[in-house]
Image (cartoon, rainbow, N blue to C red; front, side, top):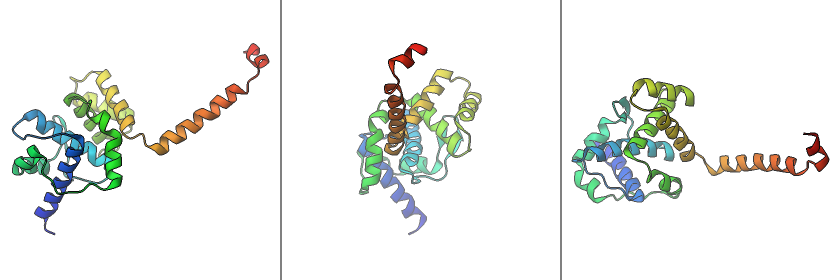
Length: 188
């Protein structure tokens, strides 16, 4: 498979993901282009498979020249949602799980979330370092929108395994409190 075919397969997969979300991208629309860039970056982290490998941090956050070329070269496919790619069950479940949240995000939210993810994944910063770095790189963002982005990331990546571990921990704490006698409560 040559590079052009590989890129085409990536684009088919991305369009299939967009179809699952019910999103169409028109490369003539600047907002749609930003949305495509941010969703591609976020989705590839969610499914844990690269879509476009050349993401760099740019003015509005993660940006891929490959993706830009693809949505201009395949404009009709993006607008109409044309893709022969079949999403596997695992990727389908991962995207369906976060779909309700992704569909509520504004363009600004997507920019913040994708930017924080980039700083954490590509630059190896922890959550706090990424928040501080984003504030430096984008001083026009307020702290609340950055914190909101960090919370959205937690929701996007909160897997069932983590949920079960959290619930088990909470259940242990609840049992401890349930076992406390009235006499012990009076001492407190």
